[in-house]
Image (cartoon, rainbow, N blue to C red):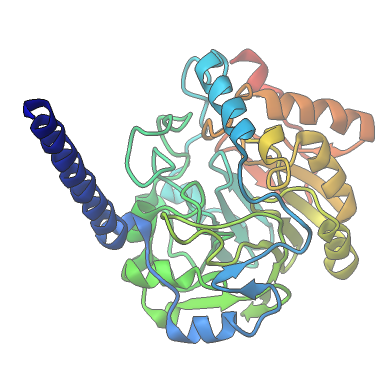
Length: 376
């Protein structure tokens, strides 16, 4: 009888702990600001009218594996347990720093890009200041330390040194592309946010006025003075919390001004690249993802060899590889993406640009870039 009472007490306290933990999770997901917010009523009405939205979720154009099997989890945990000593660089990657006067001296007749590592760019085109996926935080997660820190110790252009931003362009709502802390610092110096359908709910939650936000569905465009921004398909997914997977749209982008630019965002390889090339190409430059790949999620992130093919599909000239050089979100070598991409680019005679983080990139120029990563 005594043992039975002890077991009852254990079950009772385990139940209470589980209940409290569940309540804690609900409170965190609903009130911790980094998780973001929900699409507003206007967005929801539009979402319900588009062809790839059903039962609260968006879907991809092609069939994509959405959930892991038990065998997949075993493979993933096996890789994590095994580890990879070259998963991140031994020291901070090199960064070329900018100051305010250098930014002010940029020529209006040139299109200039500055890569921050991973997928973030400062773009100066048609005299406009544009930020693409401005993730300036150290950790691509809702809380610090649960994922490895950024590969650089300092940003090439500090937020305080940035000029007034005409447009912030976002590809989707994952933490390595949409950062709460960065948006909080940028919202008062940014005129307009252009985002995929539904993503505006996060920005509104963080205090960005609704009047500053434009949400687009695939193949919709908005003209900002003399630059046209067009949302185009990608093969990926979205979500920041426990219950919002696929709840907002993900996009690649076409930016058309004095040059024609394609930004892939995150995407697996799919036939949509050829359609984008036919409809919107050719492109002076493609900012195309090549990192954080794995056979377990091959549908939603490209291998470097596929990156080159996607670049060819969209009819690109200069190829700037993105989604590498920032964070370790997969188990491959940190420099694996650029090594593989360089090899196949030479074989295919691709105009590959490999800037140091912070290096000035002149779109349409005839620049030579170093293999800087080989010494790291």
